[in-house]
Length: 415
Image (cartoon, rainbow, N blue to C red; front, side, top):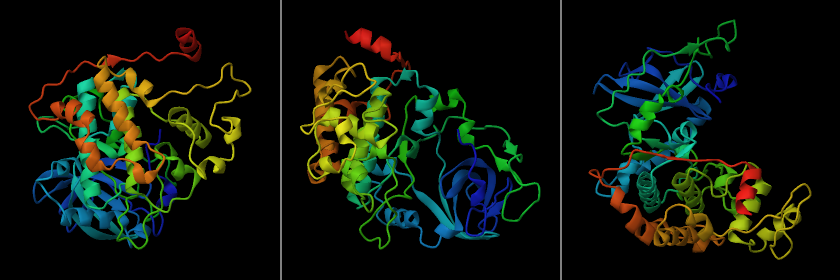
């Protein structure tokens, strides 16, 4: 578990050293605590003295502040903001921005609304229980609307995973987490202006279970982090960097130059399934096992992708049939999307509608994958998500206990 940013990034051109009580933008924003960090930024809880509100301050590395693609996306989203579009409420907004000069250079600073824990944190904390079906459907419906809002504005998010899906903090909820917790044991004994005097354990790792639970009672999400996003107007777009578990075969076996709308749709299907089942659709650590899982679910890839998979013969014959692998007691078996959707509810029609939607999203031909606007209108979203997306809906609070079987127990149950 990584609590802190990489100390090697505190150098000229790197991260800006921040301390509790520091102020930015001529004293407007005062640092209260640390929210977290990314690969090239730190994120802080600050108080806006102009509005007396708490907001989020993202401070980007100096070397990435000169041509920040994320800033371009956020500016575009502000220029095209449409409050009448229901998807707008599920995408994070930029409230302010400025440049701050520090010992490591000039840093772009982005102020955004304060949000709560990510869905990743919820899945980690409550890994042994599944969300109520109605709550999961509500979350997925919101996520589809968020992606559709971006796609209608020509933005491919490029990094759709549960860590970039944040929960709103209910207005009635007290989020006083006490004093910041600092740690200076990892810092050099000799002070340097390029490094902070201490590190701060991020609030996201100090959220209590009850706080996360409260945010999930009637959840509203915000899709965030546009550092990997792509727009056609970009002359030097960020390279594709999303986890391989979220990529279609062409994103694993070929070098895609940047994010695309079609890649977003594939990743969206994987994340949706994870939310709905508290599990993974195609989730494995290594490329070969990701590709194996895809093939076992969707069948043989089209050429030239099939032939470009260098280790394919270890898993499948030329026709796409699983082969027996040394060290395994059984040969892997094919499992269709319909079969994967069967266990979610007792409603066969709902499960069939879910499988049909996933099939549209997980097509090998990127051009024939469903568009986000098609998803908004599809049967499963309209009939099985929309009823749970209103502000006045009452959702069940009790989660379903998940029992994880060992491989031996699973085999015994299936015989």
